[in-house]
Image 1 (cartoon, rainbow, N blue to C red):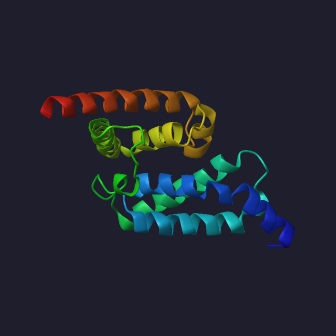
Image 2 (image 1 turned 60 degrees about the horizontal axis):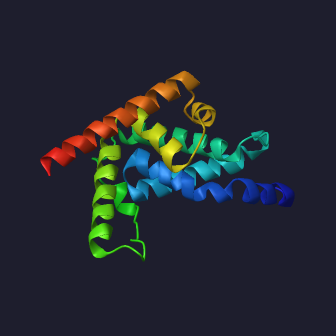
Length: 173
């Protein structure tokens, strides 16, 4: 890779490293596997950067990360049990929060992460791509390789499942 191409890669693709890692953690449920998968994805991206047409860099790299994670999963023949992905995501209570509000916010976050982790993979990935990475329906369709209508349907179903899971948790607790 020449210096100009390397500079373009660094400017366009490297800034999406955190988004790539977050997606991989949610798909693989294991921090170490996610880091390895993202490293593999970035190596593939470097090798194939000449095929990047300058469109949406975030969607392009997340597509590669998603493919690597799905292939990783097939190789390992597993997706780890729910819970591991949320453990890497921390939230610091706001300075203005009183202890009770901070506790309730952290409790809700933990319940939400458990509910997201429990979603079937196709629903989990659209929630992560839309809500965490703020990708549009069209961008999610590009990343996942499914029609926009399917993205919209999966997102609606995922939200419904999340709502039901949170209501069930509320009734249990």
